[in-house]
Length: 51
Image (cartoon, rainbow, N blue to C red; front, side, top):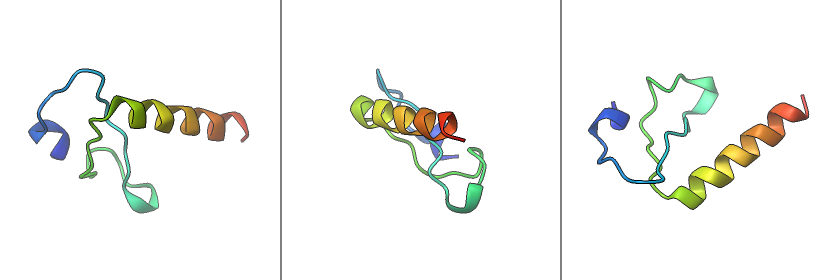
């Protein structure tokens, strides 16, 4: 997977970006920008909180 092939970086994180609810295992996107990861986590947390 992209996650296993990616170069580890500090403050990076795995954010599933696949369309249609695909699993993280099938995903091909690895975000290495810590700011983007933090923003994505906040957005996901906010979406879950409003459900």
